[in-house]
Image (cartoon, rainbow, N blue to C red; front, top):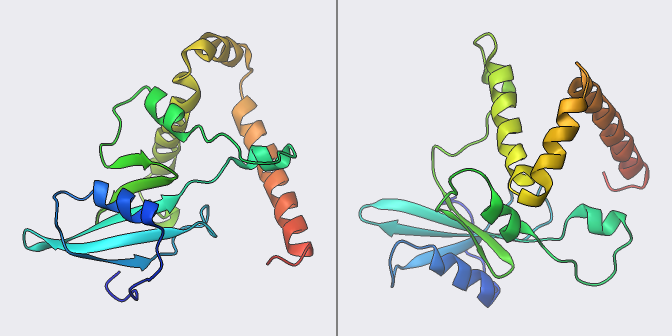
Length: 188
């Protein structure tokens, strides 16, 4: 992050969002543009890097965008972004360093907050524990919708044996087909 060049012309709303998550007022910082991950390519991301109490801190503001469902369903005009509703309804303790500020998701960046590479999971069964944890966290979204919870649990109770594995396989096929179409259209 230190090597990233200082960025000019950052939206005022992004600056305000970054400053809101700083641990104190009047902290001198520099802002850079950041590219990270695969799921958020193309979204504006800015990081504020500062010295605080003898150490470096970093905060990131990432632009909120509507769900792809809005686009797929032919939606026109601005789509309602339900991130805060979903975040507030989760059935677990919220992360105090992830906040919604206007049209920005703001979070703390930390040296130990990094992605998990599957090839590094050497112990037997580690992948299954990781997938279970990911599924548990993902389930916070619909289970946090109290009006939908009973119906979801009833639906899950009716499923037979290997249904999730089969559905996952179908999803892989659909994503690969979409990717092939995307490449064919010249985006890759």
